[in-house]
Image (cartoon, rainbow, N blue to C red; front, side, top):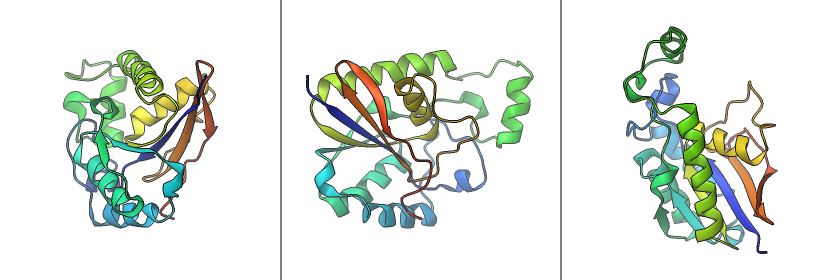
Length: 192
């Protein structure tokens, strides 16, 4: 059986990241720091490590991928399933406001449940294993989805509860013998 590698890069910083606001599926662009982060991180990515560069359709991920592509000379393939979890009407709230709303058990219109996110993440891993069998895919995506993918591949061992994936962090998963596993876990940014 062939080995498939999946590198998961969290997009560069946005103003909502800096303000600790939930972005979800809202299309919030990179800010000037995010652009610089992506350019810096791109110089630390070895082009010979990757066959495919993929991105979420949201502009913060697409633009991060485009900046990486300029450095490593790969075209960007948009994969809709790499999109971030939808937080519905809670998007734009601060993390404190989100916790209060979430803990109140009030229904949040448009919220993608953890269960639905897990179903989508499992389907994405299956897609990557079949459509990109034997390839090395670097995918620019989003914090909540990447965390869920890592959790699935590590069988719940990672990420640690207090770990926050920094913008431009790179985590690596590997698919071999029908199973996904985490080959490199890192919360720090490549841009540091």
